[in-house]
Image (cartoon, rainbow, N blue to C red; front, side, top):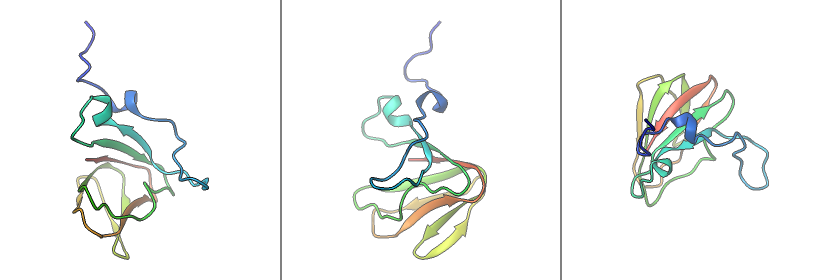
Length: 115
C-alpha cells in the first residue's frame, strides 16, 4: 500500500546542493522544505543539512515571523548579536520576530530542524 501524502521523509524533499545568494558562489545549507512538501500553508518547517564551513544564510533578522532551531546532530555554531555560540545535539534556539542578527554556521557536519 502506498503511504499517504501527509507522510514524507526529509530526503524525498531535499533540494539540490546549489543554494546561493545572487552574485555569489558561496554555497549554503542543503534544505528540505518539509511544510511545503506536506502541503502545510501556515507553518514553516525545514530540515537543513549544514556541511563543514557553510552557513544557512547571511546574517539577518526576521521582522514578520519567529524562527526555531533544534539541533539533531553535529556541533554547529550560531552567531547572535556579534557573539558565536557553540551548539550541540538537543540544543534549541528561538529567534523572536525582532532585529536580533543571527546565522547558524558549521565547522563540523550537522543537521538541524527549523520551523
